[in-house]
Image 1 (cartoon, helix red, strand yellow):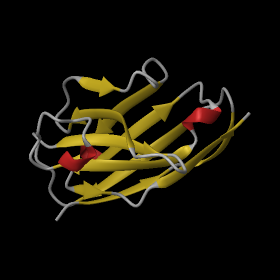
Image 2 (cartoon, rainbow, N blue to C red):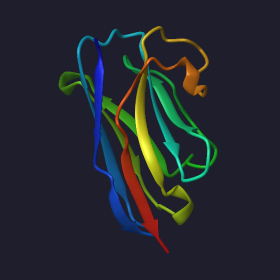
Image 3 (cartoon, rainbow, N blue to C red):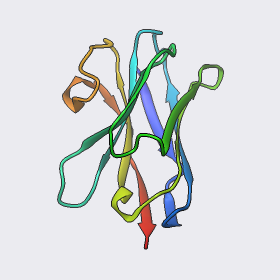
Length: 125
């Protein structure tokens, strides 16, 4: 049973940076798709970034492309989301997720089987 625990959220001023971590326990197969999503108050959960656990191409939402970078340290079973040039519109609860079956629908939150508890990111103007 895979479990995910996020950390690293907090309050930052516009233009600042944060790095989120997602520690995974349990066995994660190389074909597993890992993703980051976020949900702002009153809005639906939206895709942020995704990549296979084994590496390869990483996909980003247009709204974060060039500012956010997703990476993983397989030896530590940890995934990261480096967020630079943060803006108030990035304020949300951020979730990491695992699609154990590695489906191609990486932007669809329904494709993900396991979710972390979320970590709050607040960007002040």
